Image (cartoon, rainbow, N blue to C red; front, side):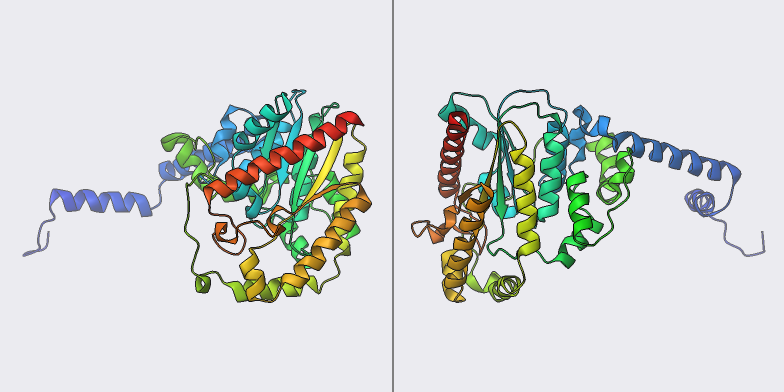
Length: 373
């Protein structure tokens, strides 16, 4: 030691040794890193497989408690291997439909009572769900269908244009759900875009979805445990006061609606037509197009009432053309505008409950019509 040099304390020496081991090079450290990485990759490949995700461990798929994309993925995959012969109601659409109808049990209990039949209900609506995502979820869920009745409620945008081809391809190239579909690949080719490569390996086919969930997966697997259920935004809350008008981004939403209405809606309608054609080939299936209509006050404030009414008529005529049913519950003049939390989402619990009652009654009537031929 140099004369006059100050000797380090034991704590400082231990910290220095730790830092040297952490940042320095050593064969043992390198081997430990390689082994750790291999173990992590092995867990990743094991978890993100069809067998694991559709099994009991699939509960760990949720990235957070209201991870609608993971919940929709899990429900679609499990329905694809479900041997049940009970009738099935699938709910697709945006956060409008996710929050309005809530968890599966909210609707299945009502349907069971109305029809004296046990129903499987799968609310697979997700925030900003593209038509291609909806079709992929439906397609995979129907893989196990052997003739049981199927009702598909598809929430569609307020205007028939809905999605431009560019937007559809952006969502397709970086998918937020973990389900692939030959129906979708065929539509992508029709739109002039190359389909993503396919294999039988889940994490390769759904790389974006899997990679986004990997970081939290390890923490939940080894420390926290799974989320027990998914909360559909405001659907489990008793009541949420409406946002102030100036906090709703209404000018932006109104501008988007006008821009979409100016687009050619044909590619969107062709996809719905294709879906209806596929469903018509099943022994017992029916499509319901549900127009997700914004709050009436918003339409008045931005002079959109006439445009939405015109679009509603267009959707009705289109639904009749393809043999689908049509429903636009929030377009009814009697629907309480004060029930909306913002331009698109319903925050009033009693209104959501009444909407579920109406949905169950609508589907029960469709089911009866199917039985009558």
